[in-house]
Image 1 (cartoon, protein in one colour):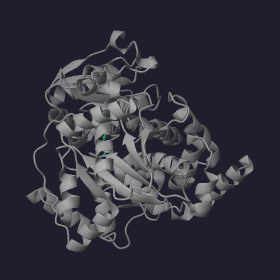
Image 2 (spheres, rainbow, N blue to C red; image 1 turned 90 degrees about the horizontal axis):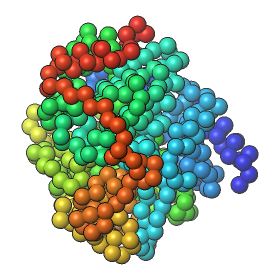
Image 3 (tube, rainbow, N blue to C red; image 1 turned 135 degrees about the vertical axis):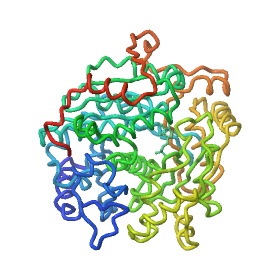
Amino acid sequence: MRPAAWGDRLHRFPPALGSCVAYLSTRDARTPPARLGFEDVLLAGLAPDGGLYVPDAWPPLDAPALRALRGRSYAEIACAVVAPFIGEALSAASLRPLVAAAYQTFDHAAVAPLKELGPELWLMELFHGPSLAFKDYALQLVGPLFEQVLKKRGQRLTVIGATSGDTGSAAIEACRERDCLDIFILYPEGRVSEVQRRQMTTVAAANAHAIAISGSFDDCQDLVKAMFADTPFRQALNLSAVNSINWARIMAQVVYYVAAAVALGAPERPVSFAVPTGNFGNVYAAHVARRMGLPIAELVIGTNRNDILARHFNTGAMTISRVEASLSPSMDIQVPSNFERLLYELKERDGAAVARALAEFRRTGSLPASASEWRAAQALFQACRVDDAETRQSIADTFRATGELLDPHSAIAVAAAKAARRRGDVPMVALACAHPAKFPEAVAAATGRRPELPGRLCDLMQRPERRPRLPNDLGAVEDYVRAHARATGKGGAP
Ligand SMILES: *Cc1c(COP(=O)(O)O)cnc(C)c1O
């Protein structure tokens, strides 16, 4: 296809869809509900009523649009997919260089390469970004988007977050060296792996701070919540979060589903995906792609022993139990926050009904779902629980059959793909969400082969670390943030 056709396409996308790019909160009970633009949704993350933002219409990705993406680079596909969600917040002319720069640092030319594992079974590698986990694919784009919007508004932000491992380094990599942002990540001292810790503590950027807290991940999360609840502090520092409920992260994750489907023959051929799932953000992005028009046959959710989603899709019950540690720590989650977005759709966009259901979920630990809602959800997703023994087996089997080393999260995707797929005639893509070298012990135990860090990180274990340590004490943490942040709140809270 001639480059001109691509240009036409790009230019036609935003104007045609500009009128429908508005966002609703999943808990807005008013009629009509409030409609927000992309900038406000980006900076706010969570809606004031506690709901999550969703677009009020799905930008269409019809057959001609998909054909126009054939042979395009990842950045070009990203531009086409995200432009309608961003709408007028950013012109096509300023979006293109921003997206191109976001994926330039990835260490594979295809950005999200596909590898064939077997007959109609593929692996999509999503670990070629700076932190070696799939969260980079969204955060590397969301960081510059934040910067762009803040500059336009003349504001500065202080980003704070807690991490049990992967999110912290992906967030630091997204925010480092950005003038409008300072970032503070709290992690539990001694409870993240050495690779994970060093990915945060060796970043030599003046605006990035990884702080060891003497406590658990829950303590770190409680400290973050307490800082947000401290209104004078929140306003003075202009606090913001980059957690996985931000719509912009979902939007950026739609891109690799589109890229993979087009590479495997969409729109003429459908494709299926298997996604290792924790917070339901990644697999929800696949659902969004399908709603936009991507021909997706099956969506398989893989969970570890923390299987609330597998239980839900297989039995209808959505009941919380205790979080248990597993080989795949990024999926050790009991409340899948992004499920609220699907619930909003299942309840036909009745924000009051969503708010009531979630209040009951909090009170009783059980989400009320009608039989018709459950059937509708089952038609969209299949789910499969993969325990630690099966995860090890999946790593070992894949290595024996293909020579590929899978990290435990990716191994769950492959195992779930094989166990739950119904359509053997449709290509199934399992998502490899982390590089095997992020979890070397588990991989070595299953295969006898110790995965190596990619070249650009080969000296990670020798790099100097900055390791500030603080007690599990709100006053101490706030003092530290105040002393090191550059935001003064003078720009006004967003
Ligand atoms: C975050 C993460 C997941 C879970 O993704 P969700 O969007 O929360 O469902 C799975 N695997 C890895 C490696 C992750 O970092």
